[in-house]
Length: 120
Image 1 (cartoon, rainbow, N blue to C red):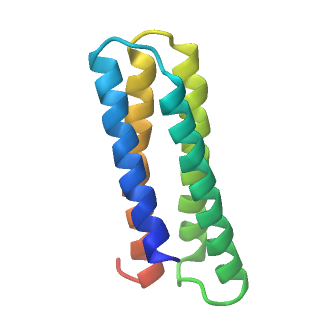
Image 2 (tube, helix red, strand yellow):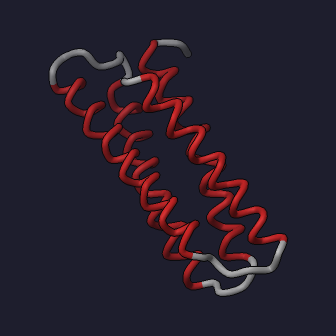
């Protein structure tokens, strides 16, 4: 795992979560900025997953490989589901869904770092 990449994913996700909360409070539907941010977040998560899987295949992975791969897969799935659900809900709850999804990503990335380092 690359620490600076994980840190930037956590910071970017929290920034997007704050944007989603602001849009929900202002009663606005999901906009282009939030969608673009979720797209960039997804690209970063895909890069992280690719690096993580490459390291696991190379024999440098954590002891709990299945859990690690599960968390990687979970982080990849969350942003597209949030976009699909958020675009389907054209009220304030669309950005709220994106905000909840963006709050979940830092927890999962943090857990990935813990698994990678071998801490329970």
